[in-house]
Image (cartoon, rainbow, N blue to C red; front, top):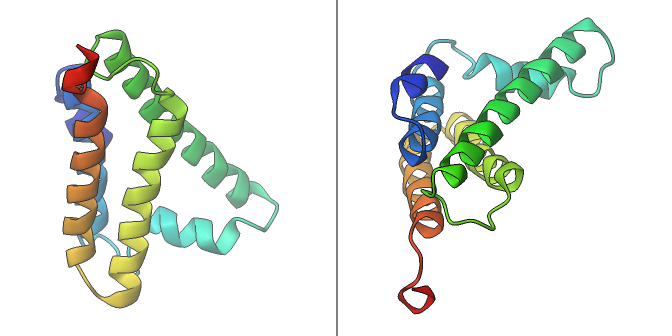
Length: 134
């Protein structure tokens, strides 16, 4: 899911590609129980040990990549300055993870469509300055 996003040009297009590719990955039935990582985290988040540590490291890597990608878009002037990269990355990730969990739980693939609309609207909101700010 990261490779397709890395092919996108740096900036907001790469942020959007990360969000989209994660949803694409989660929506495809690679595993019968949904996303392996979401399932494993739910099972091991409160259990100390090597599996927990590996999952935590994977999540940290993902969130760091997302945050760095957002920060890069801010640096390029494509996301309005003043947006905290870690907060925006957390928010985008939370929307996508909730969609994936609910899609599986409720058997409703439309949750991915909702997440795509919300993610697009959120990114549009941080990439366009209001007319009064110009």
